Image 1 (tube, rainbow over the protein chains, first blue to last red):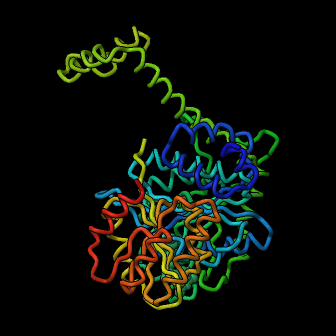
Image 2 (cartoon, rainbow over the protein chains, first blue to last red; image 1 turned 90 degrees about the vertical axis):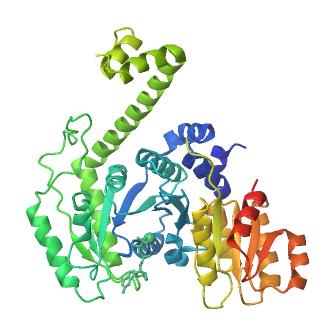
Image 3 (spheres, protein in one colour; image 1 turned 135 degrees about the vertical axis):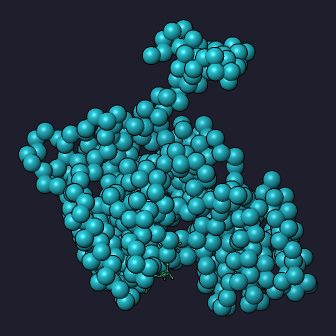
Length: 331
Length: 131
Ligand SMILES: Nc1nc2c(ncn2[C@@H]2O[C@H](COP(=O)(O)OP(=O)(O)OP(=O)(O)O)[C@@H](O)[C@H]2O)c(=O)[nH]1
Ligand SMILES: [Mg+2]
């Protein structure tokens, strides 16, 4: 039996192996994604991001316990940074998720960023698709708030939680990291700590400052409109939810907000719009990759090097060079 | 395309208190370019085998100071095998009397490292073991 069939039959080892293939972007991984594609598209993808130490893993742990009580199967992708110097990583998010062990309805996978941003987004997308196809209704993706990779992952998620905590200095960390805009729900975790009111107040005033924006990511600058049958869909204004992830306070309320957001996405047509935008950009990425590699196969190495030489000497611009290599077909 | 990374699970089975040694090893392996999944304290053999499966690791490092290695190591190897992960290697760091080492090696433990062991040796052995 092949790995994909085994995954669809609920084999966890096969699932783990395919995740590795996808992370390493192997031929087998690509083939598995293609076969699993028709089975995916049902899961609710939830991004959880925020500054280091705000309690993201603890929060994911609590949310997973809560979703399990509703009998939903939960997958978790926990992303931590690779060392830029050695390429190695210590992935420590599982430490806070020990409550989740021994439950076949849960699957946790740790992942290192491994350098390239584009690669991370692609690997994360692939992994969530596998979990989705394998029947996990909820897929949570934890990332450390550091800018672009969070934005890429928010593009992937249906609902993005940005986690803050009091006591990390006066600044709102998410603003520093430039990720406040991607929040669908703001979580003030560690609400047992002094300073919650201040953190919450600061977030509120930030929210009032920023226009409520619709979180549909444009594709080629084209606005992805909401489904036509929906009349004046209300804009979503991110709620702020307090939580204490060491004891579960605020978790049912947060889960409720997440459900309301999912409902909002469906009713407004944003769910479908996000899905389409994501599939289009995936199409784009694959198309580019394929065309480039087809092109490189067609053009002899020597010819390519020759033209490149002229570019180095600045006697040809890159655009002119491409035009020459593609027989005048470039714009 | 990324080159294949060595993935290591570092776990601390048993009830004894601290994980300083485990953290030192975890960091050393990271500095050697490996991806280390760190699970923290008080892991049962079942938890360790489950994490090894979900993370599809190449090797599992156990930090054992309690003296329970002769019970824990065989149990963990057994669970790995039951999960279809008989190819996953196991090494032990901690306090293990010399006379226990041959028996541990015989059941499939690839290395046993006392408090004085050099991390270079551990790294070299892991690279050899997962080849
Ligand atoms: N007092 C208090 N401590 C908390 C709360 N939530 C998490 N913590 C503690 O905060 C620390 C960090 O928690 P994690 O869940 O590992 O935080 P994280 O954001 O996942 O951390 P990184 O993944 O390293 O960025 C741990 O010591 C937790 O026990 C909370 O609600 N209240
Ligand atoms: Mg974490």
